[in-house]
Length: 171
Image (cartoon, rainbow, N blue to C red; front, side, top):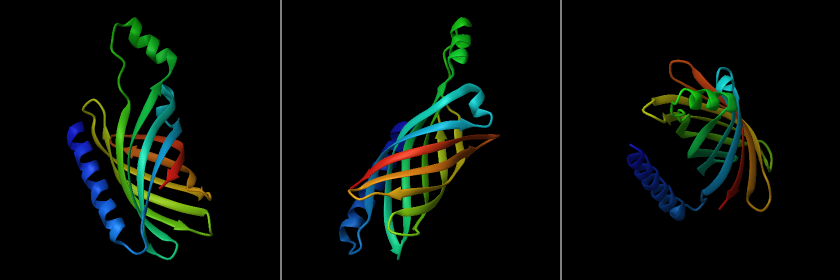
């Protein structure tokens, strides 16, 4: 399954890349580090979320961009949860996902933007697929750097959520 998802991501990136090269307006890729704090029931078992993401922004109107992103997010287990699994002789569960989302990003002024994305999160250990949504705000700095804060949730028989910070470089 992971090989199929990776193949689709590479194919999608190549498609967007070739389209961006033929566009007069041109889009931008960004690569970023994601760090988050779990919310709701997630905070009972996890203390921190870490990951990375690749995003493509394509202009569709003045100050408005269509976005496509894919990444990897891992919920790090709290130490007492890890100890409990170890004491029972059980392997720790892998609480991770590959979220793939599409959305819109609107720049209110030269650097400040709002963004909303919808998509799917492919959950680890055969957990299936969850509906993903992520509204957020951010700022694009001179030199290609960008910082954003978002609420991200994955819904499937309950909700796994976080407040996340993304620090990225656009190229």
